[in-house]
Image 1 (cartoon, rainbow, N blue to C red):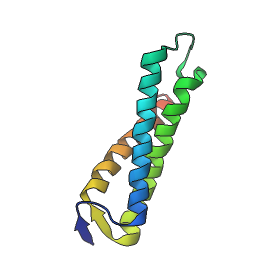
Image 2 (cartoon, rainbow, N blue to C red):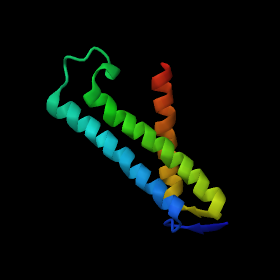
Image 3 (tube, rainbow, N blue to C red):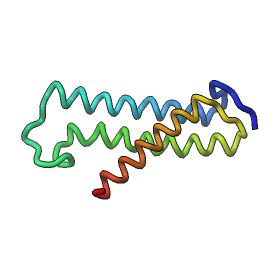
Length: 103
């Protein structure tokens, strides 16, 4: 296995793109929550303006984790940036599962 700072293969770059979408989903969630203050929503999932960006972030984190694992095992390249982003996305994915399951 080769160790590098930045990833150079295609799957790792797709994983980084999915991480960027995850950050964009979180940013949209907080911008919508700050600017528009959806106060007529009883629960989180009853307000589509908040649910859609958060589900985008959660789905993107799952894609980032899967693509990152696939990139490491298929191309036998480990990069520092990919590992850090993989761990952050794994944390978001596990947190999303815990919120969805009610833990």
